[in-house]
Length: 451
Image (cartoon, rainbow, N blue to C red):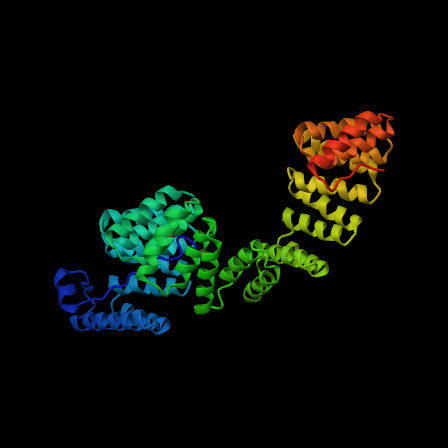
């Protein structure tokens, strides 16, 4: 997904010779002749033209030639910073922007470009400061507000970021990148309907923008409009089949709509494009498990764990796959790792106890369930499973207590009523057992009293 902050515009400078010289902006040092100064300006402008054609390396070479002739040509320094930043050489770009600002401290555009380079270096607080300086110098610069929003969003200040994006849009009503970033920020706050409206405005301006449509699909998903979201993802992928995030988003929707085979295909395409996605491997494993392809599912979970060894949910899901494969000891090992990785993970603790019980380790299972109940006294499933363990240990009075505790928490727990009935039979209380069997059958007609 194209996240907020990824769409920030750089700005470059053209040096009009007559105007620049008259204003004194490009005044040459004494050792630079007027002819040399003019030549430097020409090189800067040629570099700008090449940059705008995407010929960044050639532009860099011309900016350097211009600066070799006239080191005081602030526009060339700033433009060189822009080009270097475009090449990912952010630290070099920052140095050039700083040098340009020493020559012209009141240049709001260079301050804004500096903010972008700092943002790329993840120096968000410094980027915010640069953008704020740019805005103070140039209050009507929409790119500076958009960049400020990105840096604020990265700092976790979503409300402030939204305000900055709205300001950028008010200054430039057709600023699609600001619309996209605003929508993505609203997505992060789960303000789905508002985000949908923003993305629709953006798409009205740029119907073919795949990144905007992908974010739009996410908002539609959040709003529960899954059919519309699937259609949006398919539009993205028709135009941009190498969008790994959209394949993943489509796969999640297909999984929710019980199209496991379609989800598998989509997740596999996403991972073929970008193998370093531990969460997508989990999603793939879930879809494979739903298809009954347990060995393949386990392999997907294992790949996820290799990418992110501490991911408790991948460990838990791998344990589930092993349980489905009737390998309780292997499952127990994974559940234990999941609990160690995320101590407050009741589903994993419950599964751990169940695996221990399936492996015949009843004492360990009892310990696990009692620990879980101590942490979560309202966990009806833990009480139910504790009852099962105690029943299998022949401790019928304690088992009955556990089933009754489960029923107090969930009176409609049909199997707890049934198992309590079986336990009461062991305790020679046939009348009470019959009442429990009757209630179990009322809640679940498939549960028939034993003959």
